[in-house]
Image (cartoon, rainbow, N blue to C red):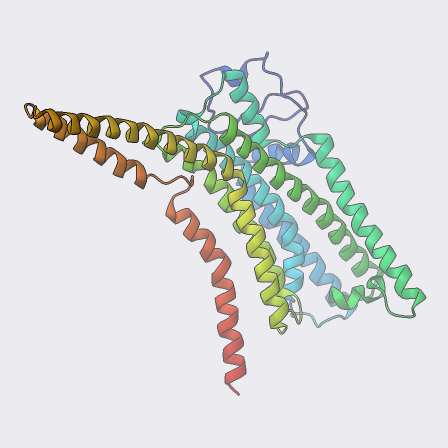
Length: 384
C-alpha cells in the first residue's frame, strides 16, 4: 500500500495517486506550505501498519465500547450482559470522525488525480494544491480543536454556576443520567475522557471539513480548464463533498437514534432533520458554486457565439432571397442546420459539476432515515 502522507514536519506528502509529472512530488525544492497537523501525523503512522487503517479505527471503537460497558457493569448502572446503544455511539463516534477524515483525504487525493485533465496549474501549484487538499495546518488545527474543548468546558461551567445559584441541577450533576453511566469515579473519569476527546476530535473534524472544502472551491474557481464537451473530470470533487455530507448525516442520525427519548419527540426530530438537511446541502454544494458560475459563463459565451453565427447565416439567407441568388443554398442550409444542432447540444450541457447519481445518493442518505422513522412512529401510534 502506498502512503498518503509522509511523516515529519518538513517532509513532502506522498499520495496514492499523484497529479504531478513523474518525480515532481519528490522534488526537494517543493517545500510544503506548512507542517502537518496531529491528525495527519497520526493517519500517516496508521497507514504504515500492515493492516487496513479502518480495521484500526474499528478496534479503537471496540476497545472504547468494551471499557465503557465494563465500567457500567462494575458500577451497577445496568446488569452484566446488557448493552446500551448510546454507549456504542459514544465509543464509536471518536474513531468514526478519525476514519472519515482519513477516508476523505484519500478520496480527495484520488479526485485530484482524476481532475488532472482539467487542472490549470504549474507543477509547483499542483504540488501545493495536492498538499493542501489532504493536509491540515498544524497550528490552526490545534488552536481550533483547543477552542472547541475550552468553549464546551466554559459552557458547562457557566451552566453549573447559574443553575446552582437558582437551586436547579446543572449539567455536571445530571451527567450520570444524561450519559446513562454509573456515578463511580472510574466510570465518570472514563466518560469525561471520552467526551473531552470527542470535543477535540470534533473540532478537528469541523476544521478539516471547512479547510478541505475551501481548497476544493479554490481548485474549481482558480485552477480549472473548462471543456464543455468533457465534463467528466469536473464531477470528481463532487464525490468528496457528497461523502463529507453523508458522513455528517450518519453521525447525526446515529446520535438521534441512540439518544434516550429523542425519537419520542417528533417535532424535535423533524427540526433536527431540517437542520441536518441544510448543513448537508451546504456542505455538498458550496465548494461547487465557483465552477458552476464558470460553467454558466462559458456556456453563455458559447451560446452567444452560436447566436452571432446564426444571425449572420440568417442575414445571408435573407440577402440571397432578396437578390434572388439561390445557387448553393444547400451549403447554407447545412450550415444553419449545423448551427441549430450545436445550439441544442449546448443547451443540454449541465452547469452543475455532479452527475445525477451523486445527488440522488445524498438525497437518499438524508430522507431514508427520516422516512423509516416516520413509518415506525406511525406504526407505534396505530398499533396497540
